Image 1 (cartoon, rainbow, N blue to C red):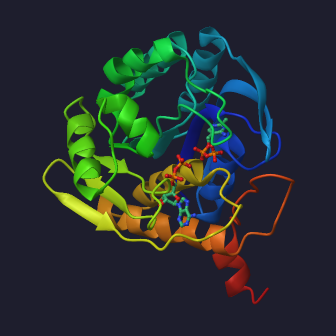
Image 2: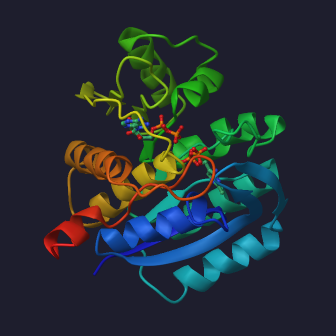
Length: 265
Ligand SMILES: Nc1ncnc2c1ncn2[C@@H]1O[C@H](COP(=O)(O)OP(=O)(O)O)[C@@H](O)[C@H]1O
Ligand SMILES: Cc1ncc(COP(=O)(O)OP(=O)(O)O)c(N)n1
């Protein structure tokens, strides 16, 4: 069994952040671990506030995992402030995990900022160069590049621009597109298109967290990058399509659809 750790913020309602990451790792047959960067008060209706964990405590959690357990892949989500980013980047340089998937979480769908504006530059300088795969959504790719993105050509250009910051590969996610949900991967050499129908659903809370965690799990399980993304995208598509309506706002995706299907449930 492969061991995957999420370095992310919390969601007590279970749809996004560390909870989504853990469910995704488990659904992929991986051993799931969590390093918490921020305690977030949120639910399906939005974010109420958050408290950042101190850099010392984040470092101590990372040490506790890496000094004890072999880590096959790392997924990084909410990193809030420059000090959090710097401490994580230092620990990645120290432990050199085989796969680092970074979801550059900036603003929750509900509109609440999860990354301070002054942390954007630190993210670019310190964390993006350590990413094997970076998974921005369209608004995040716009912030990282300063470009307006409204078609496949501008998604491709943004992916290339972000790769120039040092990420080995960049997946610009298309969940915010109107026409469809096509994601585009730039792997440093060329583009791969992951075409996807858009599902009309309110069960989309945590899709980005789940996608990046599924990619990390698939890489840990030995898949090549293009297959890891394709299988992860199908996982999220099934999760949205078969979600139960939970909560009063944007509910979580279904994490165990394929397991339930195999069990005939
Ligand atoms: N309504 C939807 N129908 C189908 N796929 C979706 C939908 N919304 C998001 N996705 C997919 O979920 C993943 C996360 O995308 P996105 O919503 O852009 O990220 P984020 O949650 O970070 O904003 C992508 O693979 C995207 O294509
Ligand atoms: C703690 C935490 N991390 C990340 C997010 C954002 O989740 P994401 O998958 O990008 O999608 P939405 O939940 O914003 O729809 C979060 N909300 N909380």
